Image (cartoon, rainbow over all chains, first blue to last red; front, top):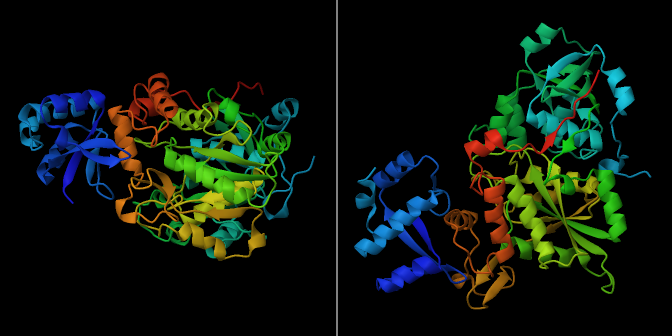
Length: 96
Length: 420
């Protein structure tokens, strides 16, 4: 299982995805709730945890980086939409 | 009225009246205590830990570690100890037969009668109670952090705590709780242990447990209740804030997901040991002292990491006679969301395992952190809105414990000023 950052999709985010023709990028996980799973390499994960000290890596169950501040998730989401790709972590981490 | 608690022992409140208390503490050696000990003093003094009337002596600790029994033979799984350093003992000249004044928040709190001063191998204690000596286990780490000596002896509360809002309306002593149950006309009460804000998986666990507990009783009148008993104790960064846990459970009833006459929210002060099966037995004892008749145990009750099998906390109840406890375990599997059934359903009934979607605690926390409102099948909107409100009102903008919350939160209880 690869490491991911889960970006949960509310109506506002879904509208942006639809506008960019990216609605299919979101997968359904729980009773219709949608998520975009942004992949991270081991190195990217380490850097995220270093740059955002509140974040935690859940190695036991979901293999995802959690507890990232909401505004950071917003920035990651915006970059996904801008680049029309989920492989954006290198680009995102350039700023940190 | 006399109430009988765990082990067939009467629930005794060890609390001195104010005028007697001021006199009783004059001249006693003060010993400051930390939060865990203060919470356990409250538990002992009001009978939550019946039959304990104080901190354990060596014989009790030995019995608990080796046989899961107190020295008097009554079932008990976790040591309740008062630790102190040799330095402090020497510095204050503490000896057996003394009475100490335990202080908290710089105020007098309780008298400890020094019946015995003893040592105990902390590694052995950890291994016997938690089944491991790894300090990654939070219960083991807590054990290793104990100071090098222990004092066993009775305690008496001299300065009852003031429970602060919003917790004050949810704190009931065992005697008060039993009176509440009598007022409600509940004959059977099933406990839901929690440290989480409730998603619908939790809600259905409670509803399923209610049905199990109610069993053959008549249905014309409500005689069975669900008691949510939130554990309030030491917090760790990333935990849900206490206020959100308690208020969000309560809103399930206020918003009608439970009828007014079948559901009640309450708190107990306790620092989780994460002892898995042993803690399940401890929780059963605690709730039997509160007057409950049934206790729901789900998957991985009070577990941590991979130290325990997810159903060890069910199986442990087969290891001792049924009459060792005054409360019946209600053993349940998880509830999940099934897209085929189109509902939250019991995993022990639903035949669509491949398609099922689990309520992962981590995912739910992630959703809350993002502030994204989940479908009402997963999270009741009233609960979600209240989490966000609690984050603003109590959590300095976060539904989860942060450094700021740890430092600046309003304490769950305070000790009043006391002249002596």
